[in-house]
Image (cartoon, rainbow, N blue to C red; front, side, top):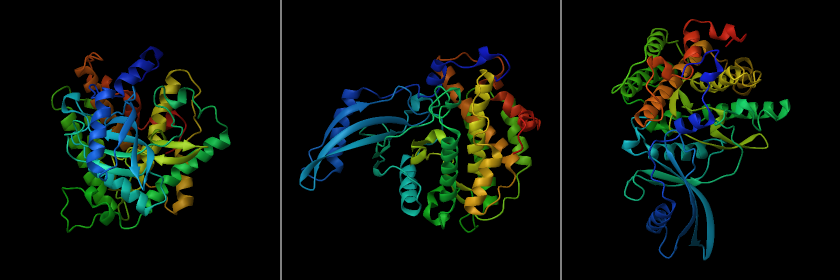
Length: 399
């Protein structure tokens, strides 16, 4: 589905929902209730006598991991205590997964380390289960928190609690979201504390600076695309963008930092416009700060472009490159470098994900295969304009 001036190409709410969840789910609530109760009995102290209730698998499940919401009660410290929990479950192989590898235990360990070494709010993670025996796949369990999330379906730029907020409240949310990045990037000794994120194709004797980490990240994106396209069509636009990125890697300076990876406001729970939980760590990596900054800026532009296509006012002054980088500089002292490259790289990374999402939709009969594979990229026009260096001038913004 390419982005063009014809609003009939805009996906409906149903289209977004279908593309935003796994094609197959292990979701019978009653079976899950029994299996979760049995599993809890195996990890809790003897005599805990767990009971599981209110099992729910959200209709608009995650784009990659499956999510199971449940309440549980067990005996602890001499009394019964209730817990509101979330299980994040790796997808079944038959669900045409979004990513080639799902390391739920790594996500669990990253979240624990972030909570230990930074003020970034993350849900408390309780258990990591590597065996697929209990639920049909590896999973981890974390606390369930309440808050407001800028919606993806329909995009928050189409009209939401965020568009209805005052400019001052939106600015408070924006600045607090940038502060999340500043706090993550300030974690000391990230290579030691997040050793599992070190690229596997770099000799351990080589120090991991930002430049080395960025080159490794780009190599990994090439491998990801080749995997995503292995059994289906190939995208000339993605290949052109990969070639451009590989030929113009900037000389990133300084040490590699912990990068959230999926740094967007749709992965944050807010209360009163302040973050209370930072979610979705499967793309966490070590790299230059601009990986997160470029992703946060471009992912808002992605939704803003959809609003423009639909003839809606959107939020054109929200999360602008100038504001995001100025706030980040004020909070960290770091001036963002090569932002045009990093927003292009973010658009490319997002294109590969969208391409794989559409491959999955085609595999499950949810969408026809287009005549042009590049039409499988929802933001095809934006990515092409970035490659032609006309995107940012076209919206009157300097990255």
